[in-house]
Amino acid sequence: MQIKYSGPRPVISEHGISFKDGKEDKYVYLMISLQILQAIDQSFDTTKSYSYDLNNKKLSNDEMCTILRHYEKDIKQISLDQIKHYKIKLDEEVEHLDNSSHLSQMERKTFKNNLNIMKEYRIQRAVNKIYYMHSIQDIVYILRRESIKELDAPFYEKFWHVFQTIQGELEKGRGSVHTEIKIEPNEEGKLMVKLLISV
Image (cartoon, rainbow, N blue to C red; front, side, top):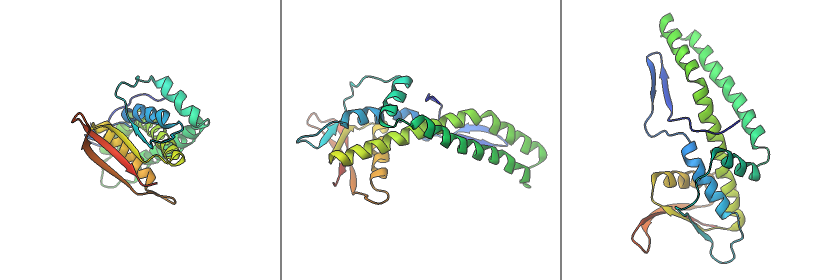
């Protein structure tokens, strides 16, 4: 199971297929999360903070898979298992239309065709999300292990999104910690997004 860009979230109906603004494929955030993961996986002696470097090398799809496999040897099997369940859900979605009394026969047929056309697209989005969320969980593990108190990155939408996802993982479940995201200028006056972690 490979990762590759799919596209924004599709909106599928009996009337056609459109794409939802602001619901980007998790693939666009994966490279950033993996670069953060690699960078924080070290022993922090004194400074318990990390600043993202914009000059980080871009990663190929194969490199991204290799990095995640380094942290989770069984990620391929995990994703295969999760996608198997997701495919069942997609099939049930199509079957459910047979019982939809508010649609005409032609509308049901069109809706089913649209769902089938977009099936592989949606599966690829699900694969990308699985890999992204596992990278986030690995980041959270290292943040806790190293007691890292701060992550900094340039204030761009993609970094903001990744920091929000990390924040969500840190604050959920048992052992949750308080976090805060701030936007502040650095010494050069450039806006930075900061994730502050109470550890």
